[in-house]
Length: 76
Image (cartoon, rainbow, N blue to C red; front, side, top):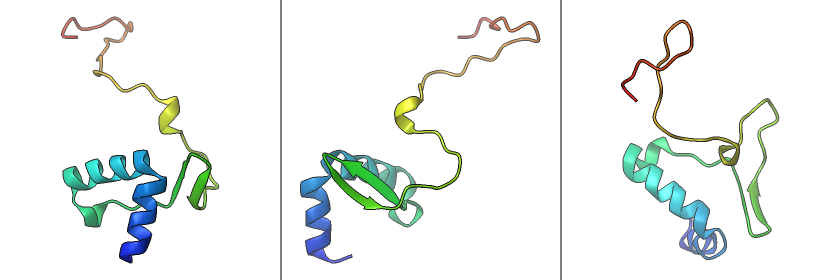
């Protein structure tokens, strides 16, 4: 990717580039690939055509392991 393209992405999709940088730092740049992103009216790539879950529609928190009746095991 050229420097001009990288700078355009950083200038126009700052939240996306921040998330990508965080994932790249954790998992290695070679293991992170963005195929679609949208921010502030700018869109790059193509959205996934199959079934998917939007990150914005998820809730991330501690995993609660339940017993067969669905009650918490008391660890969380």
